[in-house]
Length: 442
Image 1 (cartoon, rainbow, N blue to C red):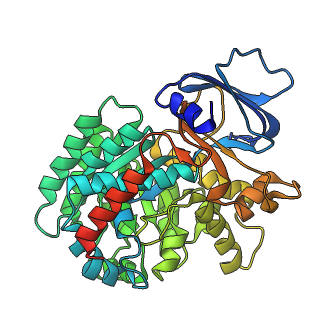
Image 2 (cartoon, rainbow, N blue to C red):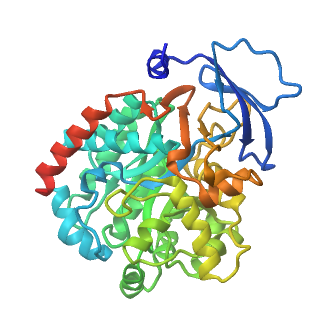
């Protein structure tokens, strides 16, 4: 039986799997790294540790990591998955020009079916790069949830709320309906996404806060992405976006703040005090010319910083390996301090920190017995990993999506040896091309 047939055989089937002969990079609280193995029983990890002293385990399938890295899957803490349909459509433009003249007009033409296929394209790309979970903010969230559910990936989906056009209350109802439709689904969950200070009124932020408090939802919001956005908020309200949100009580619920490029020292203190997670998107912020977030300073002050890709229309890929590298290197370069954001810290921003931001660090984000089997295997036989002085350093500073050989979410293999297991990749690409062409005219 060839590898592709064997992969399809386990499609949708959880089983007892033993992953052996690897270097475990666990992202646990001790930063444990060791040669060892992982046992998976159904959805969960039942053992993650050294070969010596490992219990007996009657595996239905044994996967040989072949000396590679066994790690928790990456968590893309901020993205807009349907925007794969706009990849390459609006490049080399500043954010507001990009939004107002290209993206928002194109989004007016979106449909449920277009969003579904754009999401499927994104998920295929994400899992091929080792992502086992993503956090999204967009519209047509039912279609995003459908694709996530069908594929097997883990997701937190925030229904976007904008009220500058007078439709804020309807969008808030949409967010509540999304929550109700996903209630009880442990893998695909709902959040509420007030877009940003410049598209959401103070009154709507209060309504969002009340909804989040009533239903126990997380809030996903763009914060201080550009200097212009930050300064305009100061002119409108006499406060920074973070200070405004604090004054409105929004930060009294769990908040995930995307970008945070221009947050000030006082903002960082507020974020640390209120437990706000910062979702840093270095690639997108560079490409749009927005700037570089003060990640090192936020980490120093105790803010939970996570790594993220943003959407494929502004990145233009969904590579967490690339974002992890950029996040670390930018902080070293901008601050002229090579000790900032070491490899272990960068890796944690892409794994356990993301899980904490999403409120799921008790079940995923690290390789530990009892947690969900959200696991990736990374081939370490390439030139970039030789000599094997420190595999974690190699992963962060020279790794690539192409090194990922297996991605598993909740014990279900979604990607193995170059193949996704949940859909026909040619159909995904064909449908994405079709809908992108209809919308963009390209």
